[in-house]
Image 1: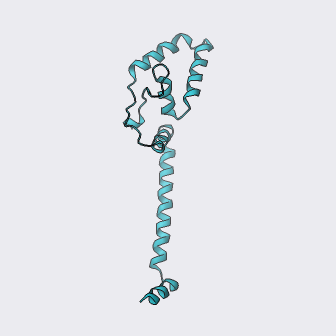
Image 2: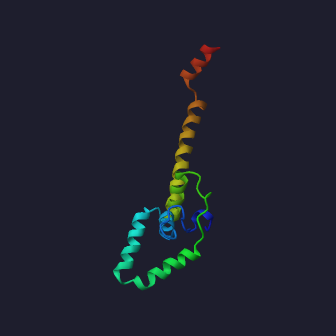
Length: 127
């Protein structure tokens, strides 16, 4: 499942330095402020500081820039973020929506196909 919408990109539109943190935020659906804050916390914690800056710049060099055409509307962006977070849950949600639509369509069909005295009387009155 490696489509353009499920790939990690640098987000240069919301970038502060190279767009890595904003790209991670876009990919995960987390606010960019919290991703940047987590990066700074990891940087100043002392445990990861020797490797966090080279990893950041390496990611900035290796990740592709996010294409402008990727999402046409905000709802589409939210949908793909949910797909990246949990594909199984998203598939269950889609199946559930289709089951609901199918159920409602079956109710409409049974209403018009079954004998409906009120509808029959209305049709007869219109003749």
